[in-house]
Image 1 (spheres, rainbow, N blue to C red):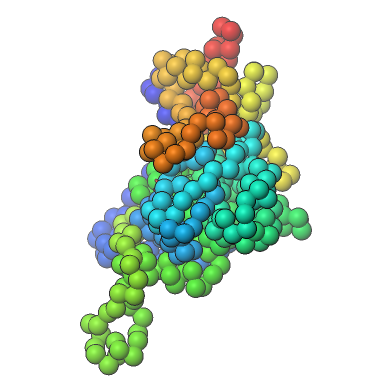
Image 2 (cartoon, protein in one colour):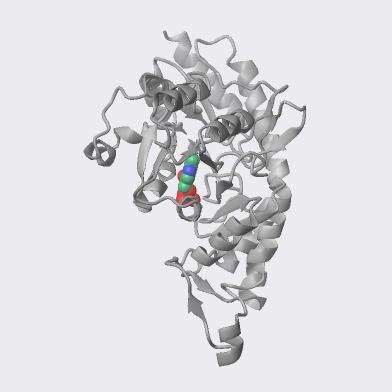
Length: 386
Ligand SMILES: Cc1ncc(COP(=O)(O)O)c(C=O)c1O
């Protein structure tokens, strides 16, 4: 059997046609495909504003900048994430603190967060960057209450979670990305993610002010708004109002992302079906399976992470069988760069224990029933030999 990766993007004839259409008839950048995608994405997640940028890392960087991160700002994030969630703060000259994780989900543990905030002197922290790891939506309503009590902004890294939702205390399903409880929310369009454009990212927000800042920062800080000076001097006149970047999202990729977005609900349904099958087929094995809690959350299953103390042996066994499982994540502050900054192992014991046990099984819409059965059979064989 050919190799089974832990994730794989899906490309259809419609995707190819959408990209060809831009190549043949559209602008390659700064054309109409980007605003069309932004409007469709905003609608999908239920946010008033969406800004598409070059990648998920750029989305985090711009959001952090727009929220005012600078050399005086200390920001709390989670160790169980891709390095970009934390790096965004460092790009802006800010500093970081890491909050420990819930041992079952790997998400930021809100009790630990509350403890950290209580222990700190007033105004120690400017904001918090939680991550909806693997597609499990963090309860942002509770986080918002903490953030309000300690005067923090919330930048939600939802790169894993488009399509996820959680039930709030009023019984309303809150879609991830609707920015109901956070200042801004970021997504990635990397091929490992639900909506694959090759590269790309999106920031959603409810704040018009933040939206306008993000649009400015995405393109060199240059304003195209009509100003009195502009109309006095001529249409060629432009002004750079802030130190921005070229983080624009090209139209070719916007067309691909838009086409992919149309299939996002179907992809989500298949991911949930595959997750349910794993849940049933692996229930009797000595593995901690992902929490599902369907009464309280709608999981987006970017990843299907199991936990076992035999992780390294299981990883090697499955790789020898051409099943390319993966580990998400090495705690960010274990990275040599972060160690040089002074962070040391032992800081977040629950996150470190999660890391030592976690393994992401293959999960993507094109994973066939036969392939999944094969994965299940090999995992069972591994435990039979124990
Ligand atoms: C949680 C998380 N945040 C941020 C990123 C960065 O996204 P990108 O690769 O699009 O820059 C990723 C992608 O790998 C991610 O998984």
